[in-house]
Image 1 (cartoon, rainbow, N blue to C red):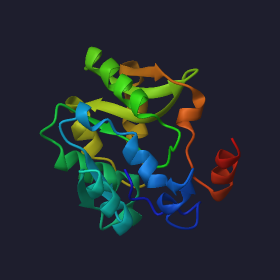
Image 2: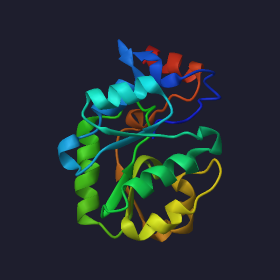
Image 3: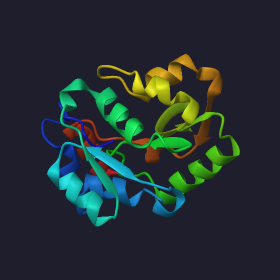
Image 4: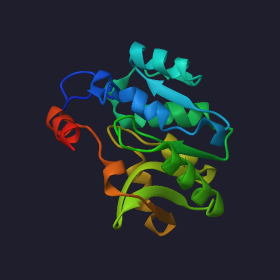
Length: 183
């Protein structure tokens, strides 16, 4: 998921530099490609499309990012509807490790009827994996809501995979970026 307008950041935050590389590269590096049958990056940004293609990932253009997160989720879900499950990753967690995502996927495979999200001390973060039975609800989302709306309706189906809090840190504002750089 790399199609947001980054209103709180004020510009395309995925181009912001963290430890010598753009935020989007951190996100793409965290994807264990060998663990997934397909990887699709939904974006409105040409620089993100180019970076994703450099990693060998498919891209899909979100022509209506103003419709909110739901548009990205609907586009991705529709394009990957032949899959048994979907993993939704956000592109603004530069501390997320590839190994962590691979371990989360292994955990999901052992609990494939459940929604699985990364978490720390009971607080859910991203990425989140959804079995195919949730695809109709993901496709019906509208507005600036994401998979959290589906999760809230199915809390009994949610399992969290515990990770260090630092891996869940996201960059929504320039202040958050500066705080992250100081760590």
